[in-house]
Length: 383
Image (cartoon, rainbow, N blue to C red; front, side, top):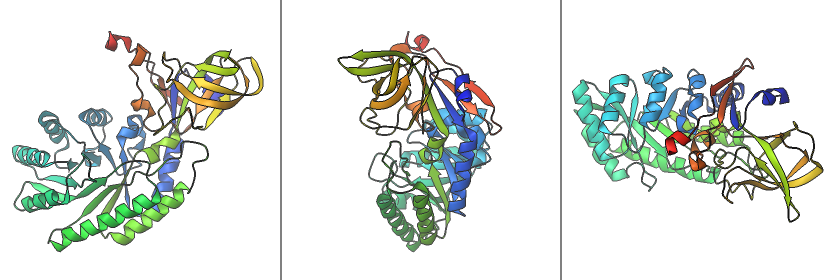
């Protein structure tokens, strides 16, 4: 994107570039081959409309996300209705809309029982995947899953397969172990006389948010995962990804609003802050993300100078980066943070200090820039 594009937008704000997003999906599909692609919309719900024809399905982890899908007219057959908790009323609303076209994830025995009850109520055969736990609060252990498998016979639910996701920002060694573990579990299911039609696997592929983090190229890793999944499984495989797919397409823009020198150290204050920009495990004050400076104002500090970049929150924790080199810095300059397409837009501590929510822009494939959300006041919520 050119500096002229950045000058058009209000700050603080996010810009999500759909051409970058679609190029990434295209590259992923080339490497995945026959493996299907599921977008975990919690990473960035603002992208689902543009991704509707690009991915095979959407993982929907809350009923609020489900309602976004309804407003965006996402087809029911593209919804994987997931999440650790769904109330009976919410689940009933989802089934009334999706019928037996969606996939329903089962996280517990009580969720299984609820789906059985609602399937009978709607006279439907609902398609479900059972979530295998990685020893945390999500999903079920192997014994519980085998107990539920016995209940599918003469049941109103159809067993579609296993869902597995253990966390994010994982490296190759961890993913290799998981694939072997899942292969062993799939073999156990077949040995016990059950079919195993589908594996929905969230590998938690890592995104390198900070300078100096690249120890392996992301495409080499994805290619290797694709090869191992296709070697180990002869079932329909769906790769679930959120952060890895969305991060690259987003930029966070914030404007320098004040410059000061305190006890020999240079500080610049921006109109955003840590309430808007949240990289995974960020410790951003100690690490250096990828930042571009867009000159707008007259230089007040000439030459290259190391600045501590701080946000507008009244807390000493609101430090984005320490000792970051900026050149010819002036009030009004834009700082553009890369790889902000995943999670930041929804994970920030937005209600703190009752500051307005940031603007959100979508840059379409034809280059047009559309404001999809104005800055929203939060003081009515807090007051």
